[in-house]
Length: 200
Image (cartoon, rainbow, N blue to C red; front, top):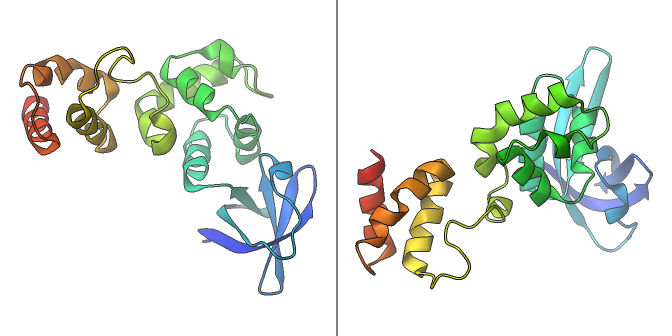
């Protein structure tokens, strides 16, 4: 199983790129080949997923670990294969995709090729509770837990984000936020300790 490849991009085609590593060229199916450029001097790192079928072995490439994780969650949805998942990821608005799943926005998802209402609903059903773990750096682009016009308590905000990183759902974190605010200003560690008591 491949995790990632680091080498030179030698071919860019509409559906794939070739990355040369120690004299071997790996053909990688990618969502948007044209974000890569042929450069004989600059190495790139591409994260890889290997798909094995009876009649085919394919390598799928991703610009970072977050994109790869999002892809892997998508292909676990009934009716979504690797090529369909790649087509969804071809839209660079991953923030919009994450928000659509989180908000059960079937209409947004049906804009992708080959995705009907039934499959879009299945994506929301299967991934809604996992969405914040799909892409940790992008999950912060969801509606902030603290409104922008509030004076942000950094320690509290760090504690809330830590809870999300631990796997607690956004609605659970929102539920205890007001209780934590009653403590006044304290350290992130204290907020987190109190939050875990409330959640457990």
